[in-house]
Image 1 (cartoon, rainbow, N blue to C red):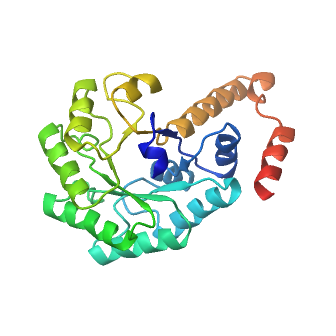
Image 2 (image 1 turned 135 degrees about the vertical axis):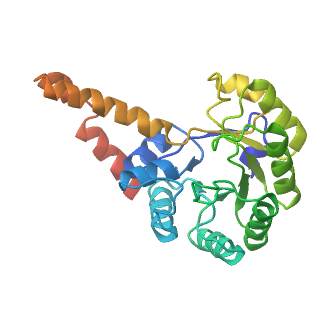
Length: 264
Protein backbone atom coordinates (compact mmCIF):
# COMPACT_ATOMS: atom_id res chain seq x y z
CA UNK A 1 0.00 0.00 0.00
CA UNK A 2 2.95 2.29 0.60
CA UNK A 3 3.54 2.54 -3.15
CA UNK A 4 0.06 4.07 -3.54
CA UNK A 5 0.41 6.71 -0.87
CA UNK A 6 3.87 8.08 -1.67
CA UNK A 7 4.35 11.18 -3.84
CA UNK A 8 3.70 10.26 -7.47
CA UNK A 9 2.27 6.83 -6.70
CA UNK A 10 3.30 4.12 -9.14
CA UNK A 11 3.06 2.82 -12.68
CA UNK A 12 1.91 -0.80 -12.51
CA UNK A 13 2.15 -2.44 -15.97
CA UNK A 14 0.26 -5.63 -16.79
CA UNK A 15 2.16 -8.75 -17.88
CA UNK A 16 0.65 -11.66 -19.79
CA UNK A 17 3.28 -14.39 -19.49
CA UNK A 18 6.53 -15.22 -17.74
CA UNK A 19 8.84 -13.46 -20.17
CA UNK A 20 6.82 -10.24 -20.29
CA UNK A 21 6.82 -10.19 -16.48
CA UNK A 22 10.59 -10.68 -16.38
CA UNK A 23 11.11 -7.89 -18.91
CA UNK A 24 9.02 -5.51 -16.79
CA UNK A 25 10.94 -6.47 -13.67
CA UNK A 26 14.24 -5.98 -15.49
CA UNK A 27 13.10 -2.50 -16.54
CA UNK A 28 12.78 -1.55 -12.88
CA UNK A 29 9.04 -1.56 -12.26
CA UNK A 30 8.27 -2.10 -8.59
CA UNK A 31 4.97 -3.96 -9.03
CA UNK A 32 3.10 -5.63 -11.87
CA UNK A 33 -0.42 -6.81 -12.52
CA UNK A 34 -2.20 -9.49 -14.43
CA UNK A 35 -4.62 -8.54 -17.21
CA UNK A 36 -7.78 -10.61 -17.36
CA UNK A 37 -8.23 -9.60 -21.01
CA UNK A 38 -4.70 -10.54 -22.04
CA UNK A 39 -4.84 -13.80 -20.10
CA UNK A 40 -8.17 -14.77 -21.64
CA UNK A 41 -6.90 -13.99 -25.13
CA UNK A 42 -3.77 -16.09 -24.68
CA UNK A 43 -6.09 -18.98 -23.81
CA UNK A 44 -8.31 -18.34 -26.82
CA UNK A 45 -11.22 -17.16 -24.70
CA UNK A 46 -13.25 -13.99 -24.10
CA UNK A 47 -12.71 -11.65 -21.17
CA UNK A 48 -15.40 -10.90 -18.63
CA UNK A 49 -17.59 -13.86 -19.51
CA UNK A 50 -16.45 -16.30 -16.82
CA UNK A 51 -14.54 -18.29 -19.43
CA UNK A 52 -11.30 -18.22 -17.40
CA UNK A 53 -11.50 -19.94 -14.04
CA UNK A 54 -10.33 -18.70 -10.67
CA UNK A 55 -7.76 -21.49 -10.52
CA UNK A 56 -6.32 -20.67 -13.93
CA UNK A 57 -5.92 -17.00 -13.06
CA UNK A 58 -4.36 -17.80 -9.69
CA UNK A 59 -1.85 -20.15 -11.29
CA UNK A 60 -0.98 -17.44 -13.82
CA UNK A 61 -0.53 -14.81 -11.10
CA UNK A 62 1.63 -17.13 -9.01
CA UNK A 63 3.89 -17.69 -12.01
CA UNK A 64 4.43 -13.95 -12.48
CA UNK A 65 5.20 -13.46 -8.82
CA UNK A 66 7.49 -16.48 -8.56
CA UNK A 67 9.56 -15.45 -11.57
CA UNK A 68 9.93 -11.78 -10.68
CA UNK A 69 9.69 -11.58 -6.90
CA UNK A 70 7.56 -8.47 -7.41
CA UNK A 71 4.20 -7.65 -5.82
CA UNK A 72 1.45 -8.84 -8.19
CA UNK A 73 -2.02 -7.35 -8.42
CA UNK A 74 -4.66 -9.76 -9.72
CA UNK A 75 -7.14 -8.33 -12.24
CA UNK A 76 -9.77 -10.83 -11.06
CA UNK A 77 -12.88 -9.63 -12.94
CA UNK A 78 -15.95 -9.84 -10.64
CA UNK A 79 -14.31 -12.06 -8.06
CA UNK A 80 -15.10 -15.30 -9.90
CA UNK A 81 -18.52 -16.20 -8.59
CA UNK A 82 -22.12 -15.09 -8.20
CA UNK A 83 -22.29 -15.09 -4.39
CA UNK A 84 -20.61 -13.06 -1.68
CA UNK A 85 -19.08 -16.28 -0.43
CA UNK A 86 -17.52 -16.83 -3.86
CA UNK A 87 -15.91 -13.39 -3.74
CA UNK A 88 -14.58 -14.02 -0.23
CA UNK A 89 -13.18 -17.39 -1.31
CA UNK A 90 -11.41 -15.77 -4.25
CA UNK A 91 -9.81 -13.16 -2.02
CA UNK A 92 -8.71 -15.82 0.47
CA UNK A 93 -7.20 -17.88 -2.35
CA UNK A 94 -5.38 -14.80 -3.64
CA UNK A 95 -3.92 -14.16 -0.20
CA UNK A 96 -2.83 -17.78 0.11
CA UNK A 97 -1.24 -17.53 -3.34
CA UNK A 98 0.90 -14.59 -2.23
CA UNK A 99 -0.75 -11.88 -4.29
CA UNK A 100 -0.25 -8.31 -3.13
CA UNK A 101 -3.49 -6.96 -4.56
CA UNK A 102 -6.80 -7.94 -6.09
CA UNK A 103 -9.41 -6.07 -8.12
CA UNK A 104 -13.14 -6.69 -7.77
CA UNK A 105 -15.36 -5.28 -10.55
CA UNK A 106 -19.08 -4.60 -10.57
CA UNK A 107 -19.44 -6.52 -13.82
CA UNK A 108 -21.74 -9.53 -14.05
CA UNK A 109 -20.50 -11.54 -17.03
CA UNK A 110 -24.01 -11.19 -18.47
CA UNK A 111 -24.02 -9.15 -21.70
CA UNK A 112 -27.73 -8.41 -21.25
CA UNK A 113 -27.06 -6.71 -17.89
CA UNK A 114 -23.30 -6.22 -17.68
CA UNK A 115 -23.24 -4.04 -14.53
CA UNK A 116 -24.53 -5.34 -11.22
CA UNK A 117 -27.05 -3.34 -9.22
CA UNK A 118 -25.58 -0.78 -6.84
CA UNK A 119 -26.31 -2.58 -3.58
CA UNK A 120 -25.00 -5.91 -4.86
CA UNK A 121 -21.84 -4.29 -6.19
CA UNK A 122 -21.13 -2.62 -2.86
CA UNK A 123 -21.84 -5.81 -0.92
CA UNK A 124 -19.35 -7.71 -3.08
CA UNK A 125 -16.60 -5.18 -2.42
CA UNK A 126 -17.40 -5.29 1.28
CA UNK A 127 -17.18 -9.09 1.21
CA UNK A 128 -13.77 -8.82 -0.43
CA UNK A 129 -12.56 -6.33 2.17
CA UNK A 130 -13.84 -8.47 5.05
CA UNK A 131 -12.06 -11.52 3.64
CA UNK A 132 -8.85 -9.56 3.00
CA UNK A 133 -8.46 -8.51 6.66
CA UNK A 134 -5.78 -6.06 5.57
CA UNK A 135 -3.59 -8.81 4.10
CA UNK A 136 -4.04 -7.76 0.47
CA UNK A 137 -4.78 -4.47 -1.29
CA UNK A 138 -8.40 -4.49 -2.50
CA UNK A 139 -9.35 -2.39 -5.52
CA UNK A 140 -13.04 -1.62 -5.98
CA UNK A 141 -13.80 -1.05 -9.64
CA UNK A 142 -16.84 0.07 -11.60
CA UNK A 143 -16.98 -0.58 -15.33
CA UNK A 144 -19.78 1.88 -16.11
CA UNK A 145 -17.79 3.67 -18.81
CA UNK A 146 -16.47 0.45 -20.33
CA UNK A 147 -19.98 -0.96 -20.56
CA UNK A 148 -21.54 2.02 -22.30
CA UNK A 149 -23.00 3.67 -19.19
CA UNK A 150 -21.52 7.21 -19.28
CA UNK A 151 -22.99 8.21 -15.93
CA UNK A 152 -20.38 10.14 -13.97
CA UNK A 153 -22.66 10.68 -10.97
CA UNK A 154 -23.39 6.96 -10.62
CA UNK A 155 -19.71 6.16 -11.11
CA UNK A 156 -18.73 8.50 -8.29
CA UNK A 157 -21.57 7.14 -6.15
CA UNK A 158 -20.29 3.60 -6.63
CA UNK A 159 -16.65 4.44 -6.02
CA UNK A 160 -17.52 6.43 -2.90
CA UNK A 161 -19.52 3.49 -1.58
CA UNK A 162 -16.67 1.11 -2.37
CA UNK A 163 -14.35 3.34 -0.35
CA UNK A 164 -16.83 3.42 2.53
CA UNK A 165 -16.96 -0.39 2.36
CA UNK A 166 -13.20 -0.42 2.90
CA UNK A 167 -11.66 -0.65 -0.58
CA UNK A 168 -8.03 0.46 -0.52
CA UNK A 169 -7.92 1.67 -4.14
CA UNK A 170 -10.64 2.77 -6.57
CA UNK A 171 -10.85 2.34 -10.32
CA UNK A 172 -13.24 3.40 -13.10
CA UNK A 173 -11.63 2.64 -16.48
CA UNK A 174 -11.77 5.30 -19.19
CA UNK A 175 -13.64 8.30 -17.78
CA UNK A 176 -14.61 10.51 -20.72
CA UNK A 177 -12.08 13.28 -20.16
CA UNK A 178 -9.66 14.85 -17.72
CA UNK A 179 -12.38 16.89 -16.03
CA UNK A 180 -14.29 13.71 -15.22
CA UNK A 181 -11.13 12.07 -13.92
CA UNK A 182 -10.37 15.03 -11.66
CA UNK A 183 -13.96 14.96 -10.41
CA UNK A 184 -13.55 11.29 -9.49
CA UNK A 185 -10.22 11.80 -7.75
CA UNK A 186 -11.57 14.78 -5.81
CA UNK A 187 -14.80 13.03 -4.79
CA UNK A 188 -13.14 9.93 -3.35
CA UNK A 189 -10.06 11.56 -1.79
CA UNK A 190 -7.99 10.51 0.07
CA UNK A 191 -8.55 6.97 -1.29
CA UNK A 192 -6.03 6.35 -4.12
CA UNK A 193 -7.37 6.12 -7.67
CA UNK A 194 -6.08 3.83 -10.41
CA UNK A 195 -6.28 4.94 -14.04
CA UNK A 196 -6.19 2.58 -16.99
CA UNK A 197 -3.86 4.42 -19.39
CA UNK A 198 -5.82 7.71 -19.50
CA UNK A 199 -9.22 9.30 -19.94
CA UNK A 200 -11.01 8.09 -23.06
CA UNK A 201 -10.51 11.24 -25.13
CA UNK A 202 -6.74 11.66 -24.90
CA UNK A 203 -3.71 9.67 -23.80
CA UNK A 204 -1.88 11.73 -21.21
CA UNK A 205 1.64 11.39 -19.89
CA UNK A 206 2.48 9.87 -16.53
CA UNK A 207 3.39 13.35 -15.29
CA UNK A 208 0.03 14.76 -16.38
CA UNK A 209 -1.84 11.97 -14.61
CA UNK A 210 0.23 12.52 -11.48
CA UNK A 211 -0.64 16.21 -11.65
CA UNK A 212 -4.30 15.14 -11.63
CA UNK A 213 -3.47 13.29 -8.36
CA UNK A 214 -3.79 9.80 -9.83
CA UNK A 215 -1.91 7.37 -7.59
CA UNK A 216 -1.70 4.26 -9.76
CA UNK A 217 -1.46 3.84 -13.52
CA UNK A 218 -2.08 0.49 -15.19
CA UNK A 219 -2.15 -0.38 -18.88
CA UNK A 220 -4.43 -3.43 -19.02
CA UNK A 221 -3.88 -5.47 -22.18
CA UNK A 222 -2.18 -2.58 -24.02
CA UNK A 223 1.36 -3.98 -23.88
CA UNK A 224 0.02 -7.35 -25.04
CA UNK A 225 -1.84 -5.80 -27.99
CA UNK A 226 1.27 -3.76 -28.81
CA UNK A 227 3.25 -7.00 -29.04
CA UNK A 228 0.51 -8.59 -31.14
CA UNK A 229 0.64 -5.64 -33.55
CA UNK A 230 4.34 -6.34 -34.03
CA UNK A 231 3.49 -9.99 -34.65
CA UNK A 232 0.83 -9.00 -37.19
CA UNK A 233 3.38 -6.92 -39.06
CA UNK A 234 5.86 -9.80 -39.04
CA UNK A 235 3.20 -12.18 -40.35
CA UNK A 236 2.34 -9.79 -43.17
CA UNK A 237 6.04 -9.56 -44.04
CA UNK A 238 6.27 -13.35 -44.07
CA UNK A 239 3.25 -13.61 -46.35
CA UNK A 240 4.97 -11.14 -48.68
CA UNK A 241 8.13 -13.23 -48.70
CA UNK A 242 10.20 -10.80 -46.60
CA UNK A 243 12.01 -13.20 -44.28
CA UNK A 244 14.36 -10.56 -42.93
CA UNK A 245 11.57 -8.31 -41.63
CA UNK A 246 9.55 -11.26 -40.39
CA UNK A 247 12.29 -12.72 -38.22
CA UNK A 248 13.72 -9.77 -36.30
CA UNK A 249 13.12 -9.60 -32.58
CA UNK A 250 14.58 -10.12 -29.16
CA UNK A 251 17.49 -12.58 -29.16
CA UNK A 252 17.38 -15.94 -27.43
CA UNK A 253 20.52 -14.87 -25.58
CA UNK A 254 18.52 -12.01 -24.06
CA UNK A 255 15.62 -14.36 -23.28
CA UNK A 256 18.04 -16.76 -21.61
CA UNK A 257 19.45 -13.98 -19.45
CA UNK A 258 15.99 -12.98 -18.29
CA UNK A 259 14.90 -16.55 -17.59
CA UNK A 260 18.08 -17.17 -15.59
CA UNK A 261 17.33 -14.17 -13.41
CA UNK A 262 13.81 -15.47 -12.84
CA UNK A 263 14.84 -18.97 -11.85
CA UNK A 264 17.52 -17.58 -9.56
